[in-house]
Each structure stands twice: as structure tokens, then as C-alpha cells.
Length: 306
Image (cartoon, rainbow, N blue to C red; front, top):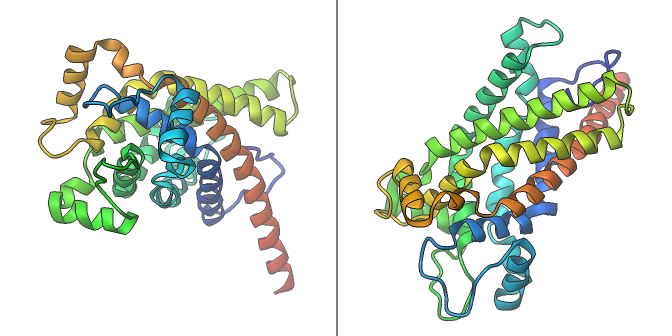
């Protein structure tokens, strides 16, 4: 997967996990304003809006946030977001090839079902481990930095502590089920689609295994992932951001959305979701390639000197 040629020495598990985590952090820093805009659009309509503030479209949301809260508001929750990627991407992306090989017994050219199963497995594993970071990230992104508007949290570590003291461990793992569902869908769609598009491009010799090929494969994977995962993503965002008692469960959250706002509520924030996932995939996969190759080259030089 991801640019490994048959003649290459496969990277170790540690190299894949470290390069995946680092690449995901780079992608998060580049695309975080789009993610914040997506969260604001997804929760719009859930509660009474601040007078005079209404978000319209991804760039309108970004413009409104900069005008009313300042540019720093676009990076609300970045610290938790980077903590999330270090825990999350290193597992869901770094372990993907190894889990895929586990299911096939090391055979080449695994089928689509095996790839889907591997993607779902690593996605679910990653969420189970990294869920508290996602809860804090989403709540910071939803928090408005306005005079006269109460802020739920003042800092990342204070947020972890506040949630634990007021909501217990269940609060830190709030929304785990919809998040596992969402990220299992995201992971298998993203990685499997990237694999299949890239293999088709190389098989038909439309491009060589270089940056344009990675760009097209990643962008296609981002679109497919957004279409599949957007409804679950909206439910996950609203449920994790909700105060205790607002929803009985994630299913109740979804039912409330359907009855009060209709089916289109499940695709709120679709454009920023697509822009974010498309650009995130491009930055992440390209960075992953370069960081992984640099780490492998460094490892070889160190081994050669010993």
C-alpha cells in the first residue's frame, strides 16, 4: 500500500506507525480550519443561535468566525486534535497493512472484503484508544470565543479534568459507538478506495507511482469517504458535544435530528467535510510517503554505521 514498490524493503511496523502519526499531524495543521467549520455547521440548529451569527457554507462560516471571534478560533481544539492523530492515525493507518496480511496469511493481492475487514478493524481499534481526545477536540471546536458567551473549557488539560470530574469516564468515552461506526466506515472506505484507485491507475498505466497518482487516489478516496460517513459523522459530533441529559443515546440523537430537522440534517457540513477529507487525504498520504521513506533511509544509514 501507499507507494511501496515490489522491490522495496517493507518498512517496519514502528516506521509505519510513527510516519502515519506524524503525517496525520501535518495534515491536521493544514486542514484544521475546514474541520472546525464543519463542526460549527453540523451543530447549527441543535441549540439557540447567538443573535446575529448564522453560518452559511464553509467559507462563509470561516469568514464569520474570523470576523466575530478572531483567526485563532479556527484552531480551537488543535492541541487535542494533534493528540488524537498521534494516538489515532498511527493505529488506523500504521497497522492497516499488518492486519491485512494477518487476515490473508501474508498472501499478495488481497480481495476487497479482506481490505474492508482490515480497515474496519484498525478504525475500531483506534477509536477505542483515542476517543477522549476526540471528545475534547469537538467540544473546543464547538465553543464560541465571544464576550458574554460562557466558555465550557479554558484549556485542553482542564477540559479532560472537567469532563472526568463532572461526567466520569463515560463522559470521556461519550459517543464511542457512533465514533467507532463512523471511523470504521471512514477507515475502510478511505484506505480501500485509495488502494483500489491507485492500483487501477497503475494497472492501466494512466500515471506512474508518484505525486499526481497519489493526489488523484487520495482525492477520490476523500469524496467516497465523505458520502458514506457524513450521516454518522454529524450524529457523532452532536452527541459528543451535547451536555449531559440532552440525548439518551446516539440513536436518540439521530432520531431527534430526523424528526426535528429532517433527513438533510445528516448531511449538514457536507462541503467542508469533503473539502477537509479530500485535502486531508492528499496532505496525509503525500506526507506519509515522504516521512516513511526518510525514516527508512535514516534507519538504513544508522544500521550501516553499526
